[in-house]
Length: 113
Image 1: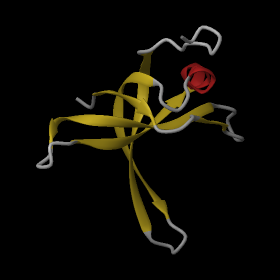
Image 2: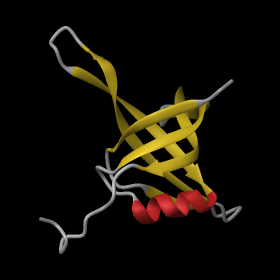
Image 3: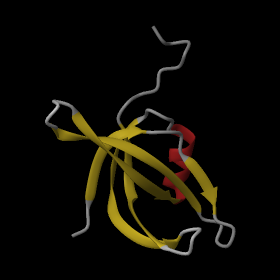
């Protein structure tokens, strides 16, 4: 079974693309996920996980998520190979999200205390 569940914060605003050949919507972002344990210095280490969302969920993610948003992501791990600018192979692991759950409500600036 290939199932991943993550909770973390977006490291920057999502990037939405519409693929020219198919018209499909794709949104990419990275979340920072703290590890459950602390290192030898007593600090929590952080993993930066790239996320891909397709279709209607991609549009919602692009419209409502921003840098710092706390979300839960459920999906599957995928791996792909690309060619870098020097002609070498680069391996990329990403999570393709099936579901996103927004874990914080945004407070508008006029409602902020």
